[in-house]
Image 1 (cartoon, one colour):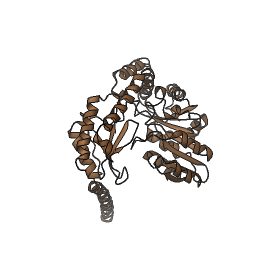
Image 2 (cartoon, helix red, strand yellow):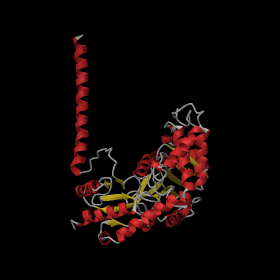
Image 3 (cartoon, helix red, strand yellow):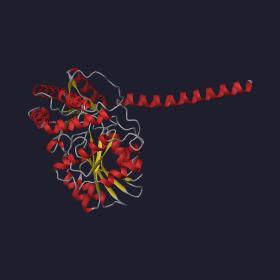
Image 4 (cartoon, one colour):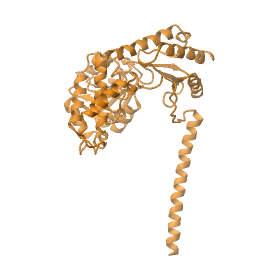
Length: 402
């Protein structure tokens, strides 16, 4: 009896000791982030002027969208469940989901589409199962981290090329092995740069590479009815796969991969995030469909956003910022200003927050060290006075130490 008690005590003590060692390791990593100035705290206060969210068209707070969703829900009062009930390969698939997939695919001039629970899931699900170990994936250095994570899971050879640099991409394509894939974003989240899609496609075609485009920051904003830059550049039947997230301009949640019917069937059978994720509840799909309908019928939303982007850029051009090295040229809603060094970048952001602007910094290691920046998101609902006041405060904060 005594031996058993001693053994149990030793077992508990050993587990406690191991747990304590692991806690110390994690605390050390957290303390390192704090020392580097990159530690993240979650905040709930959003009562300042929104210049940070991806809600570019303001649909997440749209009364019109809420009304459409509620009206749609009344037509589905016979639906007796609120959960996803299981993966779509088990019990979570419905005619409503497949109808929405067909609608979105047609809307964006694609043959087929497959819905995922988030943009991260879509990129992971697509990139982890398409390339094989003997293939080569070329990706822009500014690409979304979810793409990098997906490529890593595929075990394919991965080669990054310089941001929007066609010469470097061509040099690397000459070294490809197996099936080459090229992955880009049509609009990049970290600097607002727009990819030269036509030129990238021509390089892909000359090297038999399959082009994958993440349209998350372009869909809902560019192209007739927000169809995206792939459609605007007349590449919808040339791009192998597109990823569209509904959490940006559409003001909803989830994502879709667009491509051929063969691609859809392949993802259903081999994409682990799709296979092993519970289906999203039906009211999420209703929100997405309502957002598409609203966007398709209200071109003034897109015009308002494009007008505000042009207005903000004019304000920058008239300011002292245009002659500094801080401003990063962009034609998209994402406008950025260098504020190098985590401590300095946070200091500037905090000053902007105190002035009433909801803005978040992009710190290293989330961007390259020495490339820390202030990220400003322009929305359809921002006013001229708000943007003018922000530019004045950016001038005050970024130029006073030069």
